[in-house]
Length: 307
Image 1 (spheres, rainbow, N blue to C red):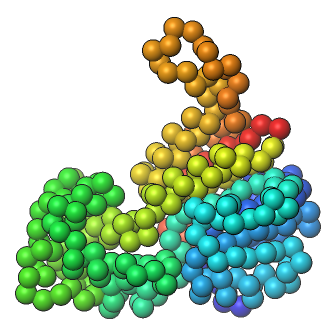
Image 2 (image 1 turned 30 degrees about the horizontal axis):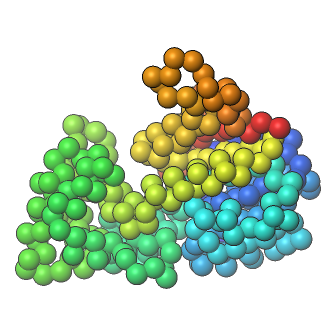
């Protein structure tokens, strides 16, 4: 079957889980690129997976059909997936995987409205939710648009672009991603190679899908589960996500959780959940970037829970 998405850092994921025997939770199944490779690489692995995109689920069910005795797929967002699994399903979990990037199919499909070239304006990863990009750009007040451009797109002059959108929509609604890209224009920030439009689209997409909130909830739920001896591998694609993951891992590794002003440790100094495996994130090789340019932004961090 034609595969619509190339999984990033696939060889690195195989290496991380090469000795794993038991269940791996794939919190972001997508089009099953990582899960298929893991299942093919070892007969000792079972996959519990989820995605909130029904199109991705239907594709992945067919793709993984030959492994159906070792795979269970659920429709869920990744933030709350662990809460849906039963105690029996959570037994013998030895790995958790999350690739929190947008899939190539979502980016490339015109009707999904993610691309600056799209004829529609949508950006919902879960098409059953109500709020989409069209609602945000046409109904958010200027201060809220400026906020998401600054926080999620890291655009310095965020209010300028928010004001451009407000002025444009006074005459007529913004109907397409192409129209929105034209409003942003072709400017770049501080001579960076990425355009302001791309950063603006990133910000709107994060707001539509509550991506940072979802990530924080996932990290909270993973830390609560903390399966003994399990490996947690997570791939992110921009600095905001990576910063959240990095800080969470540092907090998980701390043994003493007393406040900084404490004169001596009173917490017992035994609160570490495990160890950070990757002091620096793993990034794609030049060879992979040549084959798949979208891997250039990927950062993989790994944490191992204590036995």
